[in-house]
Image 1 (cartoon, helix red, strand yellow):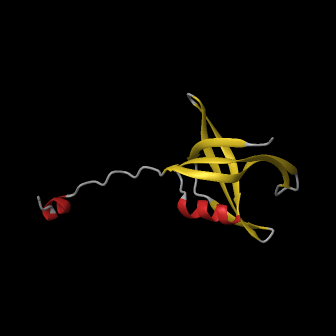
Image 2 (cartoon, helix red, strand yellow):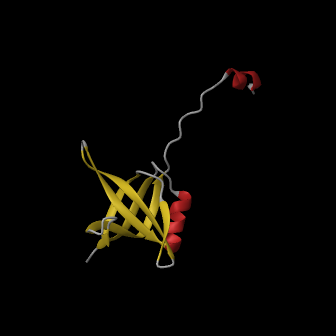
Image 3 (cartoon, helix red, strand yellow):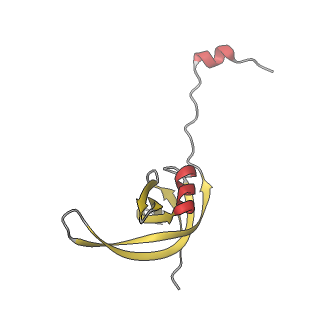
Length: 116
C-alpha cells in the first residue's frame, strides 16, 4: 500500500502550471524531522484539488496532506534524465493559516479611538 500523511508548512506560494491540458499545483511542504532538521517535500495536486490549494493556501500556512509517493523521471535543461520523489495529494486540510503580524498602533489610531 502506498500512502503518506504529512503535516507541515508551505515553504512558498503554490504554483499552478498546465500539464497534459490539466491544471497542476506544485509546492514544497516544510516538515520537521528532528529538533533542528526540516525536510522540504515536493507535493503536487491536480485539477480542482490543486486549484483549491492555490486559492486558499499561502506561504507559511500549516497544512495536513494525504496522498501517495510517486517517483517520476524528467529531462533537465541539459537533456540529462533526473528523478524526483513527490507526494501526489489525494486529500488535505488547512490546519492553521500563517499568523499575521499584529498591527502597529499609530497616533492617528489613537485620535480616532472612542472609548465605550
